[in-house]
Image (cartoon, rainbow, N blue to C red):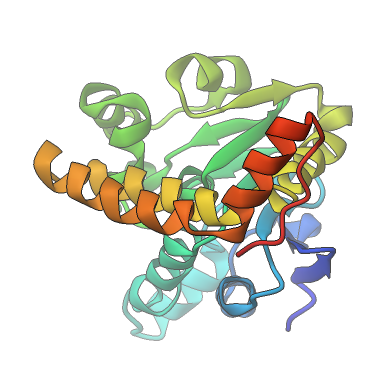
Length: 260
């Protein structure tokens, strides 16, 4: 795996870290390949119970490395990175059966914002900001933003943020529903890790079901969603974790989940 993306698993928590601080974690080809592969590895590893995606330096991720992109255009290349990288990355984040926390340590722009939007929970430094950026360089939305952003802020606000890209600070992001939690920048790393750790230690069968139900319910009718809830609840109710939770509740003890 490229040094531009760090990957570490500790006690069921996989931490994926953008590591090109000198380039504000811009996405060159090596970084995109490494990020895609790291997320796929986390998704497929049964020992991983939650994922934390964050960055080093002043930025979370500023999106496409435009210097590399200009060179590709000059050589006659096309926009293949959406199908090769962005779509698989967002699919991994949004569909893996474990929660993904974005620890947004700095600016998240373009595809970087898209990756944060695709996460299940966003802990945001008070100095961070979001920017869709796409229209500013005469591009359409990618990295799932046309799907995730309206679900976070509504259709009207999503149109505004995409047609007139601007910097959305942490407090506004919290008010809009983009950020779930805003913390002082000095506390971001610890707080994001604590949130991800709590999820990794929690009832991951239930979390996977909740994640699936939310995604399904956003695009299906009430009867169809109720049918899926029945299926998912039956599965969760048959899990060892559910029995552990009930026993712990009755004994007034903290549960120790096993992930199945």
